[in-house]
Length: 120
View 1 (cartoon, rainbow, N blue to C red):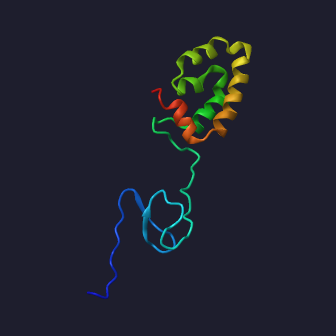
View 2 (cartoon, rainbow, N blue to C red; view 1 turned 90 degrees about the vertical axis):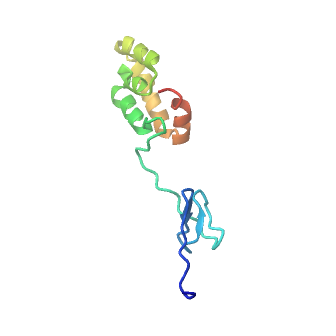
């Protein structure tokens, strides 16, 4: 069986090159064998952070129920959530929540996990 091609296996932190099929590191942007740029992993709208909270879900809470502090409770910030509930009648928390809605939508997943990941 000298003419048969060797079967390549990949490890947990490896992937196959999209062009030549060589085993490369999972985070490699360019294949070292053929030099072809690898496609980035698909970005999903509802990416869940390691702590189980979704940035998009928090943004939706901020948009629809932000005046009541729902997004703050969802993110584990109970103290500010109670302040939002206490002052919801002034409409100030609704304006702040709208700004936080925009911030949450423009924030990267890494920044979201770093800012809200420590609280459970």
